Length: 98
Image (tube, rainbow, N blue to C red; front, side, top):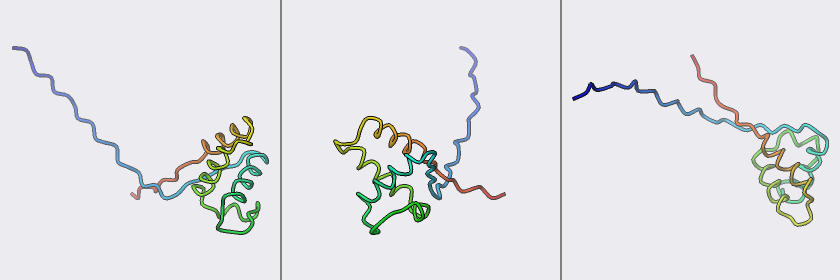
């Protein structure tokens, strides 16, 4: 018979631990639509402003944006803006020591 070919086994990549999320706003419109979503669907506070937006969990903002996106009165441009905000959410990984 023929020769047996040995394949090199690759190591499975180690799973990185996610320690948080980062949400960036690149325009005033993105910031304003996030505040609209938070003030409509976020019930943790009475009023959300630009000043307290930094301390809010990005996944909470994302949930509010998704609820806003599915309303009938949001325009196509508004939905694109919401999609852009959601796609810019980044995962923050724990750095490996050593």
